[in-house]
Length: 370
Image 1: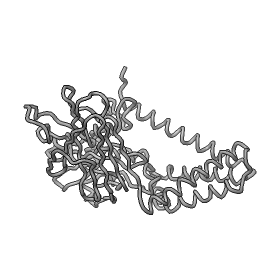
Image 2 (image 1 turned 60 degrees about the vertical axis):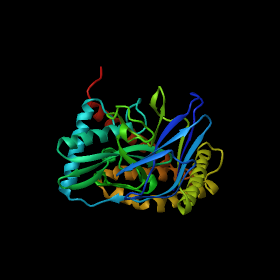
Image 3 (image 1 turned 120 degrees about the vertical axis):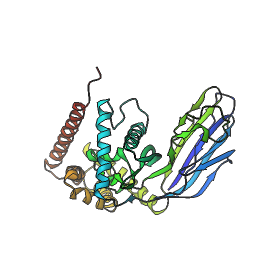
Image 4 (image 1 turned 90 degrees about the vertical axis):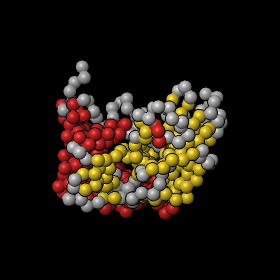
């Protein structure tokens, strides 16, 4: 996978801006190679867990960081007593946050990754109240677009764990979150690991005194969170960088296979729509396109789907794609029955009722803000 971060200096102000960038490094489950910066850093500072560099960008200047990223899942076996204790801690923190109106989706006003960061910070604070040591980790989930994410590394009396409180809770309600990527981790897997589709930038927060290119100003108590970056402008302080672009592009065989799958997916659903509207006849190329798309899904999602089916808590979500694909195939094949309509209707009603009930249950656990 090729990862790129690109910055352009904003038009206002017309004075130089100082960009602070967290540089990624090799870590368990992550290997960085062929990294390139479009301009050298003015200064770098490193400690265990992070490397920070600063750059001066003038009007019209651009900075780009490119690197190849190899990742792999880390699901480490830990004693049940240890993971159970961490899970209990997360559940207790989540219950307290819900009383304050916290939502795993962050609500309508929060930025990307803020819900995960809030939860991780709260879990880390609660762990320290128990006498445990730990640190916060910032990174990006490598989805269709890189998404900011945060989790914890904890040192407990029973051993060290790298836990992801947000995914531990999310996967209890959305067990097929990763199915499109051929993954089906269990919630408890996130008490000591992750699925492997993420980039770690480093630990947080960063004390002001650790920043490169920064003269001592008596404000060492200030703390900064870099995801992976920030811009410092005289008179304005630290601001999110303007004109930033992040992209993660799969390369090699995986990219070619994903490209073929995406092309067939577009053709399959285009054919489905045309058949449903009566613009083309069923069978023929719409059926071939959809059958080819379903066939390519098997090596991508087949094993993960089977793992979902084996778990009672995830079984209902595992059956949903089967219902949809069966209904769609019935349409493009031209089966002269009410089966497609029935499958669509029952699946839609099931989904709406389940979502409505989950939202109602979650709302009942939160106090009114009135």
